[in-house]
Length: 278
Image 1 (cartoon, rainbow, N blue to C red):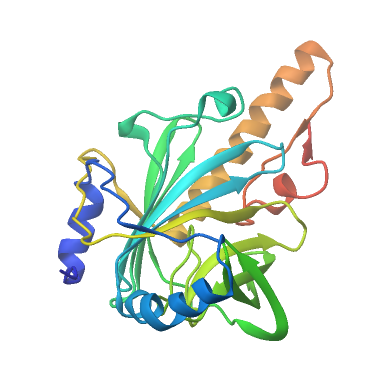
Image 2: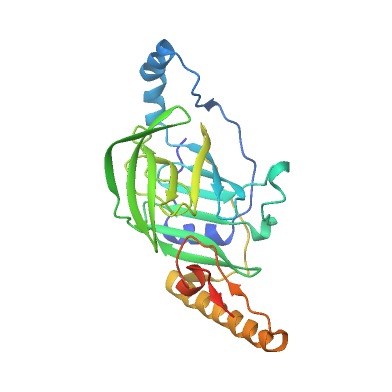
């Protein structure tokens, strides 16, 4: 059964009242181990099923500048989606910052109502942000295909909040969604990375799920911020930190730099070059 998109008020309430449930099963998993006849069988039999299905679960590997890898999961039905971080594997735990359920990172998209709810952090304090879905000015690139998980993908380019990105999407999966805040291409995004090679999302598993149950997380004490109000809050937070560090410098005499690794450019001085000297 396809999930009926929630009205805007119910969607906002969902962001305030979200609590995790089980992951479900994977009744169908893409594979790249196919010979010519199997590919033909796939195209004739399974591809129409995939195109018509609206419920998918995609696992992404996220690589950040320090080399750490974090794993995320996107659940989407084409009109509503949930994107959240997963627990790290044993081999990655030393490189990954893990949060308890009440500090879980998530991005919710209501594509029908052009609404996006996401989390960010000021130190240990989590902020919930109400934003509109940015209509990214995608430029489709011809003859630049790439195979991901055995799936043929096409290239597109766009700029988003201070960075240029290259994306690979599959036009046969007619879901205009992708990892994190990315969406708007004529197909599901399986890989996207910044041109400066600072940030990269790579799909490592994709499966079709029979249903997409609404998950509820309870964050009753959090306030919703607009993107503009969060930006100003973040700039003030960084400026206060720098003032504190400069005060400490007078006592210690040490010079250092404060650098922020963050996809969206909010505090340009703290996010470019070596950061801010103090």
